[in-house]
Figure 1: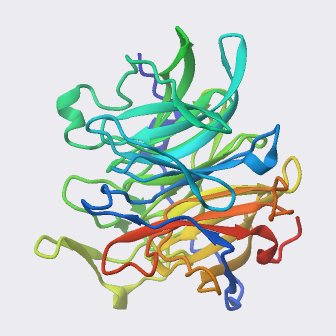
Figure 2 (figure 1 turned 180 degrees about the vertical axis):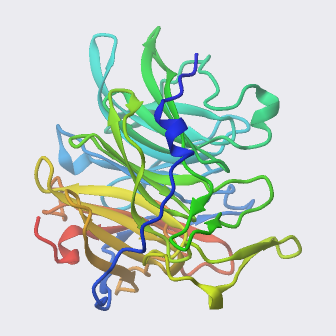
Length: 405
């Protein structure tokens, strides 16, 4: 039975009347370059409809040199890469599947063994898929009868308000629902040597907001759609979920066990927060009335996207967020959430830069070629592209950010 947190009822009543946070005069972003890039993926028939989206980093504790980067490719399934960016495995989706986001869960108890698993949202089928990770690649260990995440039946799955973003902690996966404000917590469990899950808690973020001038505002969207969340990360040591509601803000929500345990609080709003906008059915785009910006937004240009944490201690470190609208990345203090740095990834001698990034993953573990850690970023406009929609993943040496580690 699905359980809805008591917090959910409170969220609907929450008004966000505080003014926009004050930021010091911004310095120019730090410009860095990527060290390595993965092969281009092409979102067309010849390329297998592969569209890179979200990466995760698996650390091989027995041999760090054989650690892996796992990336979703939507209709193209999963891609598995080594530390030099070479593809070592390609995994197709099940029929009707579309893989959106991925995260890594370590030490999952499977029978008498503890294994590491990749948890993937299949937005095409509204399910999670679970893969056991080994140095040689991934093996599907999803139970054949896993339930739908959010939909009540297959007819509702066809509407594609399905599982979207994912972030894991302990034995739980936090999953967002596409085209809605809903978040769910699902507990992963073994079943006859495979992995299934059950709903632990549900929470709906706001879809309408009270502005400091007393007016109400909702972000523009296609009719029938609400402002969704995709990028998420859990700070397990602090018991905190960071959830990026794309057209609204980056939220901070406390977790306790398998439940949401606090009202959501905003870390930073998108720059477009509070600006009037209207959906144009002819162009199928939102027309934003920038001249009437009331000034309540933050610095992030919508969409606010990929979230990842670089730890420097049990509670210290950095939270990195993608500002997809202007291809910048924002770094916050992990403990206080105060802004620290802005950076961009520009063209370098061996790779192009990063534009319109969806997903990000980072590790502080020393790896060959990355002694202070590795940052992996989705690149939404890989070049050269031969006039085809091309995407891939870029590997960045953490030292290039110029932050203490």
